Length: 145
Ligand SMILES: [Zn+2]
Image 1 (cartoon, rainbow, N blue to C red):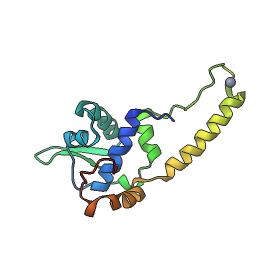
Image 2: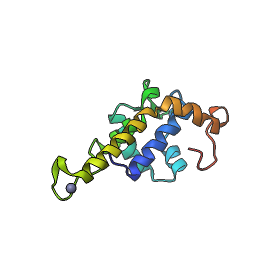
Image 3: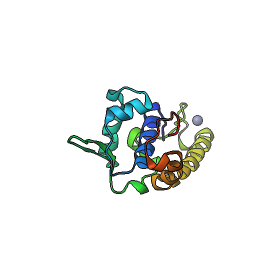
Image 4: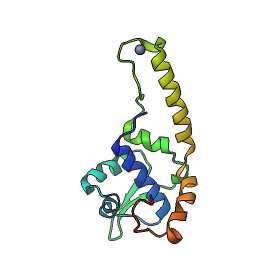
């Protein structure tokens, strides 16, 4: 797995959408303001999440992005893979191949990290995060998501 700034915004966006709930589409401008990034940049991330089947865009006056029906089972690892693909964190630069002890240890660590990230589902996280939002409403406080 890889972890970039785009992944960071994707995780924050998905967590935020899961706290707001799937019934209320949020516009890209609102999300961009929330995370203080450009709407163009966030649109690219949202497009990847749409392609991965995690988010859908609703058109019309109250249009925007919302989670798809299966959102509760989406894990952190699913979101990371949607943005980064499934490439490995580490690849021995010395061409040692699978025998390389450095690679073995780092890949073992990566596997443990992936197990943990796979167990973190939006459904569970939203329950905890919602404590930070009054009645599930969006909070204007910075840094809550
Ligand atoms: Zn090596």
